[in-house]
Length: 183
Image (tube, rainbow, N blue to C red):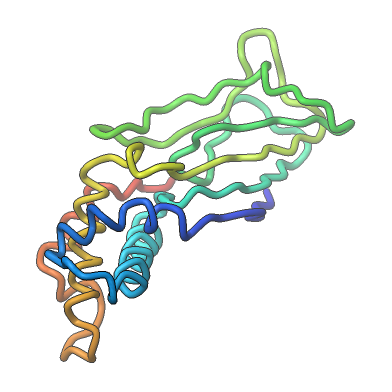
């Protein structure tokens, strides 16, 4: 199975959430706005890398091998939308459903499977939309964790004795709640 990212927007969330993030950091001036957006973007990126849970809105093309049958575990979380095309390029998305819950309180693996009476085409290509388009869509727990990490990065611009997220209070324990184990 081949997975290729075709687009990602790393700027929209940080720009939209800047006023709220400035309030969180107790910053009342604008000269650090670019740095604050950068710190928040790096915090979201850290969260994504540690949990494999996508925050930034992104699109991926997932090429499935021939002979796929039944449910297939989706390699990305959370999936917002999907399009399944067959070997002729026809959209057969109506023949498939996404199974598994991703919400503010519960996260579990997701599978793509044919609906009753349907089957996978000989060659299937799936376009996956993942992440969050707006800050309002972000689960509050993820927003809180990323604000804490971003504030730590903003306050500690210079080298600290121990680098990384480990020095941000409770960061690792907060992030692990969103980690979805893979089989």
